[in-house]
Amino acid sequence: MLNFYELLSRGNEGPYMAEQEWDLQEVAMTTMQLVQKYDLTWDREQIVTDDPAQADAVFRAGLELAQRLGVYNRTTERVIKFSPQELESGLRRMPQELLMGEGKDARRLFARKIMDPRPPMIWGGNPGAPIPESIFLPLQMSYAQEPIIDLLCTGSLTRVGDIEVRTRGPIEIAVTRREMELLRTATRRVGRPGMGILAAASAVSELGDVAVANPTYMRPSDSHLVPMLNELKMDNGNLARAVNSIEYGVINASLPCVIVGGLGGNPPGCAVVNVASFILSNLVALADYHICHPIHIRHVATSTREVLWVENIVGQAFARNAPCIMIMDIYPKSGAGTRELLYETAANAVVNTLVGGHLEGPGSADGAKPNCSGLEARLMGEVGHAVAQQGLSLQEGNELVLELLGRYESIFDNPDGNPGLPFDQVYDLMTIHPKPEWEAMYEEVKKELRQMGLTSL
Picture 1 (cartoon, rainbow, N blue to C red):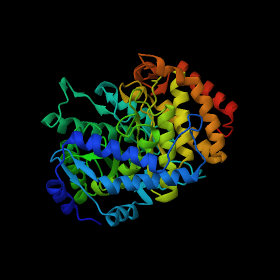
Picture 2: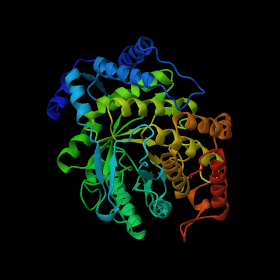
Picture 3: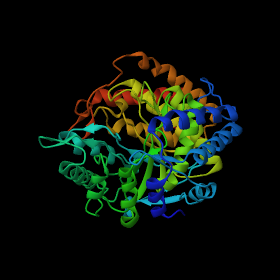
Picture 4: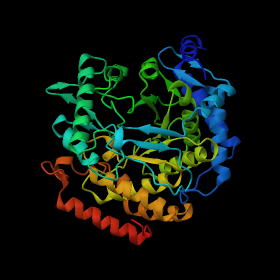
């Protein structure tokens, strides 16, 4: 493997380039050329594809993009280049199994296959959402108490007491440690103290990650994010997160949020950028597993046709060519208390389970509001398990997703979105149980899903 000191040296001494040139001349133009070279197209009616040659072509195009471009360091304005041998070494080191959590609550993550009969691991939480401290603990308990949820992820605390969180200040240390204390309390209170957690979501910078690199807060059996910036970029702050993990030993999750409709252009181009991002994250983020989280340039949500297709083809590309542990982030447009949230969650869960992913979320209401709850995460897990247990085919999955799209796609035309209700309006904060109207809606949607063909739900 590439020595990490050599990586840092390249980030300081590599070829200089202005960021605008990187964006337009390197990423945008090269991706467009590769889409044409490999004849990559997509069909709005084929969200779940059954075309192995297309998945292989997307993977080859992404590998070529990684070889031709490398990674741009925004801090130094230098390009970090890699040889084909270094990229191949990074692909070979991708773990096929990881153990997260401790004791009876530990879970073994594994690289899933296309139409894998083994059910996906389920991560419950609203990743990235701003969550007030007043509801943080009961909200996390609503996820952790669900038996189908294997691991916990979380949104971020926006303030501690009366102090608003500021990046790179003393408050970031305090708020990230407070997040970890509350997460530990939540798992203890529901009788799952060893539950593995994707942690330190309140760490806006590397300062928060360093502050919780202690078994009291973030254990080595937990994981944290080492993001890749849009598109194919890093900075010294995120490189510092990776460096911090080397000695401490925490598990690294890469997170490139490729923008569908951005520099990569159409969905095939964005899929190519996403593949390249994962390949490069093996080296610059020391990734142990990858989080697939493309987002729509206008709608943010992962439940649009375009983003669902990208997740589908990226999942299949890696499952066929370079198996790895891939967690698929689910970010519905709608919020808690709405029927559309459940439809969006189900559509994402069907696609991502079929193409070899594990499931994380849902990041309800675009992950922009605390309008979320453990109930939609329960449905996410139940749908994922049903897809695997039933042996749903890719063609059957596509038909199911198209039917679900017909039940929620109109919300993307709503200028105000479909934000739903905050957690404390859909759950009883004393019992940590869904309110009757929210639970009744969930049961009704489950019945509809069975009628659509998901009979093992």
